[in-house]
Image (cartoon, rainbow, N blue to C red; front, side, top):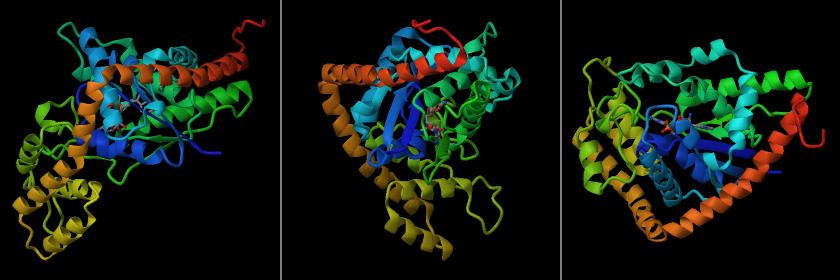
Length: 333
Ligand code: AMP
Ligand code: TRP
């Protein structure tokens, strides 16, 4: 039997190269050998201040983007069309330590960043990783392809699974493991001391669906030397450019520029030009596919609604079994 893979992404802003090289590229590649399920997690997206009108559009847009880069529509679901995730989340809340939640890095970061003028931080933000655990465990996933930043959340999901299994006296949930790509952490080209991310502002990410001219320009202005790199080591900015080149599948160009670097003769302009072109070559077919999908939006929507309904059946099965094991009510009692 094929091993199960589950991953998810929030419909907040653009899909950037960090998302793609860190996670989504793996989503596409794993489809051949695993039973894959991928979610667009809109319940997670409402844990931070947001606009309801924009959310629904962002959800469809992200789904189209995912299909455009090669995710098969039958593997995709929308989280709010599978409400069992929130039911399992409630049960898991009672198998999760409050202290561990308050210590999550993402909660600490986002609770300082997300505070509006009134200092509002939602309880949903604290609970975010429990819902994520529900996303994963509800499909009994063996593997979770994500970027490095999700490691702590996966640890929490395993803790919940162990606690639940102990309580019910059965190895019901498998313990999910992360799957990383070769590039689990892409850095911001504008500031290579931080990861590429949409929350840090426009210049800190490169949109997979940006126009070629924009991509070239962003790579051209990438920070290469921050001045504090010890002699004889490659600066994080340069390393980041090399990693993106390799992730584009341009092994030959990578090897040849790496040789030039080791010979002390690398010109950053040349590296940037090569990376810019590699990214344009990689993303151009994505753009074309996206245009086609946008022209058939109704079909895409129908397809995703149908796949969500199909995937929901598996979620319902798990929740039924969990309630049974946890001493909650099913109609037969
Ligand atoms: P998010 O956009 O935060 O919902 O992230 C979606 C996926 O992309 C998750 O699996 C993240 O771990 C991954 N990801 C986000 N930013 C980066 C980055 N800079 N480098 C590598 N992976 C990332
Ligand atoms: N927290 C993840 C992120 O920020 C998104 C996410 C939600 C997720 N549920 C998940 C990732 C389940 C993997 C599996 O990227």
